[in-house]
Length: 364
Image (tube, helix red, strand yellow):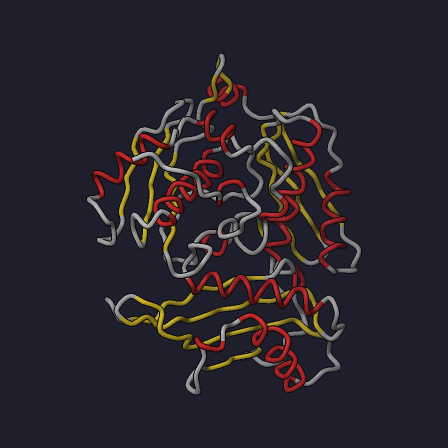
């Protein structure tokens, strides 16, 4: 279809799944801060005032799992007292031997990863997810200065395309947790004035654009008291909002030897460079790895008919300019630093503070 409406959603850091992503990546950062060779896959689950931290860790770091979890939750804005249970074992020696090799690094697991970029926005991200993230981030900033709003929230943006080009925004949905002593009209006025208007370009809005603010009515009970949360359940929010394909694994909690994370970052890096160099309007990269193997077992490029040359020729350019070996990915993207808590909310892509968003010179 050339004419269509595409919708993507985002969530705030107060959403229970994002609480868990943030806890997991805060733990990873602390491990890497003390021991850059840490191998980590420590996740979290939350319900009501109970937090379970569990997984595998092979690290020299001394980690206060309970303290990190409680600090994250408090910084998000929840004031309840939480009980934390920890069940973390050492990484399997079989996996460790497969990953850590003489002078190189093997993939931490088998799997497929995707990277995507398009020319919808200046960040080379699909417009629906880009605007949904901006609304969610703005909502989080606004609620910190307005006590009537609470940390949990969701956003959703439907973009109308005509001839595969952005035409207008059809619908905006914002749901925000709030205190009991406020009317829905007050919330709607605040969200329109301080969340939607500063973020969404006027030229994309018209008299037919629909605004649905707290469409379910009151939203007083939120966070882990309104729903359970688990690390890694929002992989569509974390990536491209459904417009680009996603692989089989989440990102949060995983150190860069896990290609679910590092290779997905590298695929985005490659796809963005293809689009940024105007070699295609859209580009998707797929790679596949086998556990313990240094190089991918396959690489696929698809520009959906938008390339300035054949996909085969573009793949040759990719292979000349990019090295998908796990060790190179980690070194080129500088992934052994404690940078991951910042990725946990508002998407892992389209944010220029991260190395995988850098546009480099290509030789072709």
